[in-house]
Length: 333
Image 1 (spheres, rainbow, N blue to C red):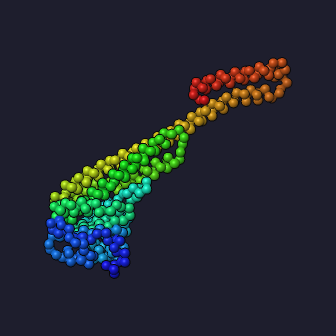
Image 2 (cartoon, one colour):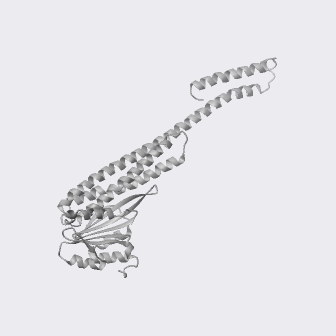
Image 3 (tube, rainbow, N blue to C red):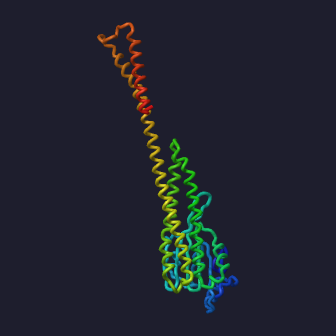
């Protein structure tokens, strides 16, 4: 395999053959794949790749006879979740999600399913499928049904990994609730809510197409999906529905939270404006009276009175006091 790429060991995670009875056989090389498939003994090959380069993809296409369009999609790694059939093989694209240091990162897994092979290609953020492989190898009876069972195991593993992400979203929203109902406005709260909703929307786009994909795997492609495996895909479908509902609920909660936060900020600003208006009204009384008697016309009443100044001050204070009591009862102060 040195003529493929010097770092091929890093891209080929597993290359294993399984006997007709589901028992794991010794690991094989890329060059031995065609020889293994040429034997009519009921065995199949399960290969796991991680971000393969173009040379390795060409070799993969040569060994399995994959369609050009499917290989091109698997190499570009920017696809929407989908399922497509090319001759006697299926090409499935799934989105993966992984929480990394408080942020959700998304990746892709591309699956090629044939009568005697399963090829998985990981791109971006994705947990290793070693637990799914170990789970399959412990159930030798189901592995004897062919590559459709490990296909179920991988899809189920991807869907199960959505739930920890949903739980992280819920935990982050719970932490933001205190900031949402805080009296002081914080721009960071709105930004965090927006980013959280954006990540949930991305997760929703990853989960929603899975319902159609799993429906097809349950009902169609009898030459590739064993009848006894279909019920397992129905179980995964139920998990997807639950994740989808949880995602929709979280998005609605985030929308409501953003609306509540903005409404509280608006109410707080209104209260501030009311208080400012109240104090402005109080200041308007002495300003009016001082400006009125500050015009210094000769014929103004009480201008020459001995106690006019004191009376004016008393009247001003009385009016201000009455206005203060009125505004206080009206909760404008």
